[in-house]
Amino acid sequence: MCCLCQPEVLPEERAFFRENYPERMIKTRGPDAHFALAMKKGCGSCVFLSDGKRKCQVYDHRTAYCRQYPFHLYLSDRVKVELDMSCRGVWTGNGTDAMAEAKDIVAKADRRIVSTLRESRAVYSQFYANCKEAGILSDQSILRMSVSENLSNFADLGYLSKVMELSQMEPVMSLSGVQKEVRPDMPELEIAARESALDSMATNDPLNAPVYCDPEWNWNVFMAKDENIVWNILTDSGDLVQKGSAEASEIPLKPLEEDGAKVLADYIRILNGRDSFMGSVFSLIDYNDYEDDMANAYYGCLSVTVLDLMWRASMLDHFTKCGMGAKGIQEAVIFYDMDRLDAPAIGAFV
Image 1 (tube, helix red, strand yellow):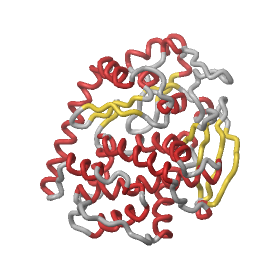
Image 2: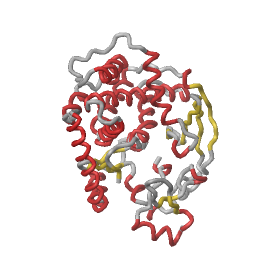
Image 3: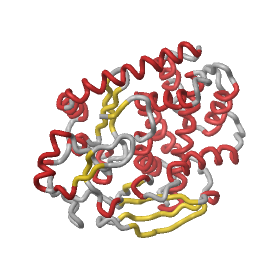
Image 4: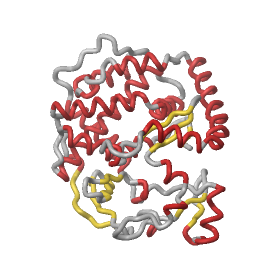
């Protein structure tokens, strides 16, 4: 997966590429323009990934981003190391100790962290001041504790339906005493789940489309147009080969099996502990001009996130027959988590 993530080339790394591979380093476009390594045909894997063998041609000189993956450093008013669950290696239980690796990465990124943390703390300070002025500030630790006490409930469609309803109706909602709906409005839930998932797939640019790295290490790219989902395989040379397609409306939100619900609850626990997820909620609060209470925004956003993942699990099962048990939900998390980490947040990744 990391070889599909166009890595930034830091100032101290540029000399090597300028001297040896000047044509393979490009300047990205947009408001946050920076130097990066080129991608095959503009949308494939990194130009330094050899075809077929999938070996990095400049492994000893790979960028800091390549060395950090699948760890991501998120800066809010503090530093948090988060693990990208889209990396299949994370699920094997093999490799180096994650905590030791994370501490080493933080130590090596100290200079970048210090300068960026100064900026991110200022942004967070202003955000908290805005929330306090609007009367919507909540204690983050209490919000997280409430979710922790209801992890298994958040994997239940009836509970998600009730939380979404309360987050829109109550001035300041609480999870205390929330009872799941026995007969949730499934058509309404399916629409909400499908719209959230399709929003990230609605692109004609493969570079911005969701990618699922399957157990055979194929890069599956899903793009939606007019609610028609096209399933492609991205080849090592950067070509897209269509594998199948389906109308999104034909894919129902499928029920979880018991072991699948447990895997989903474990993933919700991870999301609940991420500062980047909280920062993403804060970004939505700011976008909506501080109209919603922080508790409503947090619980509502988490519910939509879970629905999104459940519909993607249903979509993967539609195409690959992976099921809605533990294995199927694990595959859905692998498919989803890179997108989740890419969501807008008021902090910064370095």
